[in-house]
Every structure is written in structure tokens, then in C-alpha cells.
Picture 1 (tube, rainbow, N blue to C red):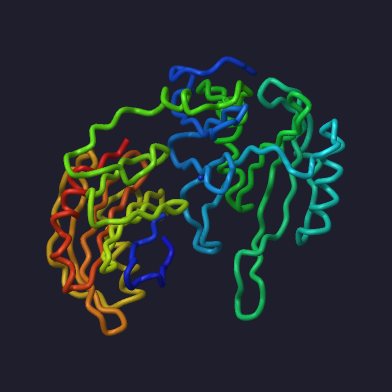
Picture 2 (picture 1 turned 60 degrees about the vertical axis):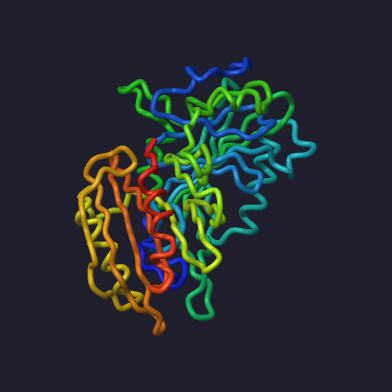
Length: 364
């Protein structure tokens, strides 16, 4: 679990993305998978519900594997599907790859094409070609130098209705093989994987989206804070709280900067033991602040799941005293973490709202 210096007003324990042309119905979603699609997409991307988080921000259709890597400060794997802007004039997969290969060779550090892992394949019922390569990617700076780490990539390129389509899979080179199972599936378990479940279809529309949206009973005086793509449902008070959604975090906050955050992750080194994970969180806090007394701690059902932990504690950073309420629950191999942060003087002002948000939280 990584250390975080983002304490102050948003201090959290960072614990953490055969062809068919008829509109799909809910029963078409493969077991253990979730749909990722944007308005107008003429394809359907399905990713596992375990570990993968849909990401349609910034005009992309994709998902990332939710575990955050300490070294890169980002998810360890991504998958996305897109029609490349630079494919104009390309009529074949080979023509487009020639453009890609030249660009990658010129722009990426230590780019290396791996011919032995590349070759013909199928994507969405269309003939395709898989291209695998490695490169060093910049993930920030150390001193005045750019920090590079090794990544591995797979591009599956096909032509559908005279347009080039690319499924891009990228991961830390050390994690690539682990996540390749999600991409390829497991024939012994009749799991086609992300690649095998992908299909082309008529353009995705808001009317079709309604078929996938579950009706949610919203508690009185509250409204939805999380999106339907998230593996949990968070409600927030109608008044007094604003919302901000990040790639793997939902944050609601007040005008005095008190805030509640929700994240989920599958961290290593916890043996899927919720008490060990709780202790790990406290240790992270101690690395960025002076942690005070544990005010309370109890076992509680959270999000409909038994065996959660809810606790309150205090801490000091920069001469300011903060109070925290944190709720953690484990479902499968995923930890869900709700953290309320406020200065000591503002803590009690919002604790009633916070308790209501925790009590009505749902793990899907």
C-alpha cells in the first residue's frame, strides 16, 4: 500500500481500470463481467467485475485494474478500445501498424517489438492482428531526471466497416502476465476473457443504457453521489455537500473543506485480513502525521457485507488537529474504504450526515 502525502483536507488511506449487430439485452453480459460503453460506440467492451474499474472519462472507452502501484502511483494495467485519429487513409491493419511502428520507435524509450508474441487473431468476429512490444515509460521525476519504468503493451488491430479499431492493453512489465489471464480468459472455466467477449454492435444509445441501469431506491433527503459504473453505491445529502469524481475515488465535501472519500482496492500483503488492512492504513497515516488516540472502533455490517470495521481516531499535521472516521469492508478480495476527514472543530458539525452516508452505502 503506498504512502500518501496528500493529507490536510483530503487525507485518505490510498488503497487503491463472435460479432453481433443487434442491441444487447442485460442477459447478454457475460457472467462475472461488466459493460463499458459510451454513447455512439458501435462496439461493446466487457471487463471483469473483479478488480477492473470502467473508465469513460476524457472520451475513451476503457477500464483499469484498480490496484495502485507504489512505484508509478497509478493502476498497474489498462485496457481501452478506440478508433485512432491517425488512421486516415489506412485501409488495412498492416498499413496502420506501419504508422504505429514508426511512431512508437521514434517516441518511446527502448521500444522493442516482440515478434514471437505477435500474430494473427480475431477481435469481435473480425480478422485481426496482435502486436506486442515493450518500452520504458516516464512516470514522474526523481530530482531533475525523468523516472522510467518498464511497460509491456499489446495492440489488437482490426478493420470494421472500413474503419480501423484498436484494442490497447498495457501493464507494468512485471504485472503483464498476471493480467493477461483477464485478457485471454480461461477455457477450462468457459471464460472468454476481455478479448473473446468483445463484439461489434449497433451504436450504443441512452435507451440501451437504461436496460443496464438498476433502479436504486434513494433514501429520503439524499441523492446519488457515485456513478452506476462504480462497484458500490454512495448517497450524499441533498444539501451542503459537493461532489468530485476521480479515476478511482469519489469525494464529497462541505464548504469548510470537511470531506468523505470512497475508494476500493486489492492490496498485496494483507492476506485478505481486514484487521491487518486496518493496521496498514493506520501505519500509513503515521508516515505523514502524528496519529493520536483511537477514539472508537467496532465491527459492523457495511454496504450489506458483514465483518466490516468502523473506527474514529485523531491526528496532527502542520500544527492542525484532524479527526477521522474510517469504515472498511472486504467483499471477495476487494477492500472498500470510506474515510471522513475534518478538523477537530468541524468534525461534529457533519458527523450525522457522515453516519447516514455510511449506513446507506451499498457494495454491489
